[in-house]
Image 1 (cartoon, rainbow, N blue to C red):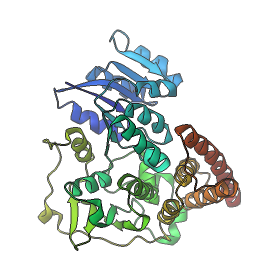
Image 2: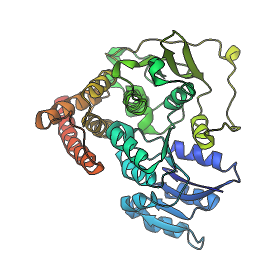
Image 3: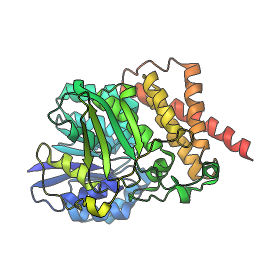
Image 4: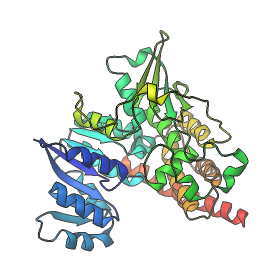
Length: 392
């Protein structure tokens, strides 16, 4: 019986993962981790009976402990406990913690030398070379779980990367895709937080509207598949039915299509290298009727231009980019800055960090990545405060 762990169990990817695990009797849940949603985490623990449940917040430890009293389930709390949980024996680990907080647990899980199903974008964006080297050191396998990267991965089965000309990631355009450009500056967190196709959390949905989510995925694809920056492209595809396209040097294009349901890429990673039955809607192209595509407007989505800059710079640029994006998003959700100010904060942070350090130098360790992250967050906080002051 395979042992599986789910890091970020209470998020949308974690919930979808547990939905699939509940349909299997050949898997044993070893670890569940979550954040502040103690009620849901405890409910998941009672349903799946893991050996260990961890909340990332120390103040949530006691409520979680009380909620799981008399269950025999071990309970722990705090960021350090989440990392320690990564060293627990597991054959398959879902890395679905949002943000840079997912870095250290993912590295810990790779030490098991098994399979890491990677939904944490930040791992590749901030520490791609280190993460891939860690996997090679321990003989571990990393499987992409983002729908777009899973689509590319599947399209490349039996193919050589040497034959690839371009990889195109599709984007819905988010909840504000039809807004006039001049109106975007006035968008509220509530308006940006409504997605037309996917059911996700607030932060990733806003990132979808700003296209920062896609910018992260562009950098991810560059790192994971070893593609040149110019080989990674983006198309707006409102229906979210085509998840990625891989174009080969003989003119052929392989596309991956499917209903917008995260259980497909999760299930693919769970069953890999085989395919298993999944409870997802089957695609009916006749019913869909049409598939639309458009080039993204960089004036509307400046995050994509910044992603190009990050890929070309390399080194620590990804870690700076991600840290600044997270801080900018915090300030937008708090209504300190406007929707379009987020890209300005990230751009200012990249410039400020580059003025202090050789930003193109690759961090030599995870500790160095975390140091870059901490400094970039401080710089982004300053940039966000300056933008907020300018708005008053």
